[in-house]
Length: 308
Image 1: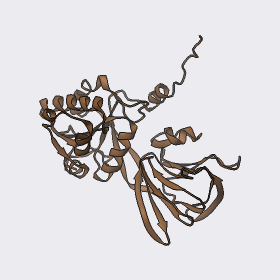
Image 2: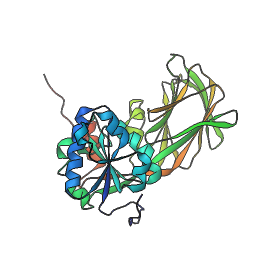
Image 3: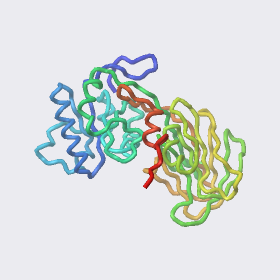
Image 4: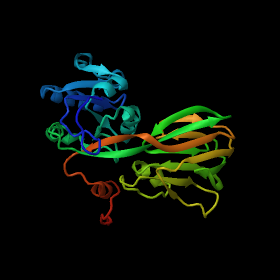
């Protein structure tokens, strides 16, 4: 990350000079958008770095591989911000890789719902004026850090922007686990699993499991049981300073998932320990962005029913 001045919140607010572009792998449509945007930014005097796996897996024609390429470490060291072209899955992957470098992210939506990708593809180039003039609004989003403890040793760890999920795996049997918060026993539960969701992830897997929607300014973690074998087990919202432990009691094929993209296998007596990460990610929103307006649009609130 460059030594640019920051605002009082610690988020960079100055116009960028070096921009990284990250796209969904193996997508010809996104490759075309990426080339269009790279050409536009280069013409404005911006140094462009394209994430190297995006280039190698996107099918870019050889004569368009003219821009500098770099891995996430190179992007973290040099880029003032990164523009992510794709859907929320692409944004999640970029966030986990770049959080420790504090590189802000801008999302161009070429996916489906796109809760984290604010800019429509047809508005991509027209939004660049406001972005390069520093008129996008920064917003900090918390991440979770989780580790898998087995026989007293850490055997896996990762970050999650959306959620950490402990589930039963591919075999259709329930798992049984014990939940502890700050060392205090909460309950034993037989279920399909448990979601530990950030506010960002509250509109993802947690939402489909009847979890609450949390505004990004809420610094809490929603614990949402998956198909609990008890009607009294409901979602719980805990503070961002609490330490959450899931201790596997009985399971055949259980796993822990980070944003649905990174997975570790679990065994009985394993402990999944979840805390708020020391890192956060900065989203840059275009002028006029509203979280509630986004919810109304994506979740179709206040729409009149269709009469056939």
